[in-house]
Image (cartoon, rainbow, N blue to C red):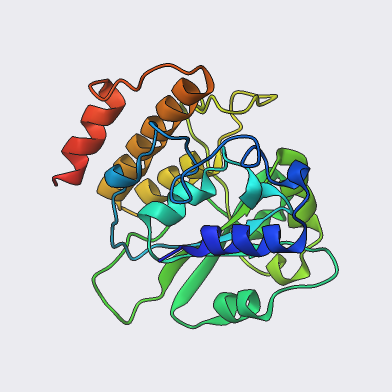
Length: 243
């Protein structure tokens, strides 16, 4: 069954079928499950994990169409992932319903320097086994840095939510798009860091390994090189999938 990002991609493509919006799919075939070309498919490696953390992706207009988008990987791994398209003048009622659902405690994941100090938090409550406790919901603005800043500023329904500001020490490993600064993380890296904060260590490590495998296969396909299924990323993902 297609996950939330896949469904959003299909809906976006139905609005405008011009080849320039198809982001490469019109030029060469891609697997609908992982967006990789023939010979590079990684659908068989997809892990599915149950966590108490949910993810709500708010995606810029064309983000779901990009084969390099890593919000897709989050939805692959975490079943409780929702995805909504962003528009300045309208908001999906289902998004508002999710943010207001009493089972969730939403946190907007964004640098604290852009929010009022009283809204900023640097930690998440560890996921308790108490089923009555509200579950952390990571509200992630998925797009370029300029698009994410615009979404943060122009979305009044986010203005009362706490802002989870990460302070990671390591540099980004993401190599599929160029970032202006090394401390700009891709969406899947940010989600993994948040899972670690919530005490979901196995899920964080699995998502990181899954991102590494996707990156390897994407770049190999781009250069028409063979996949190295014995490399460190593939070995780590297999080991974590057995846990």
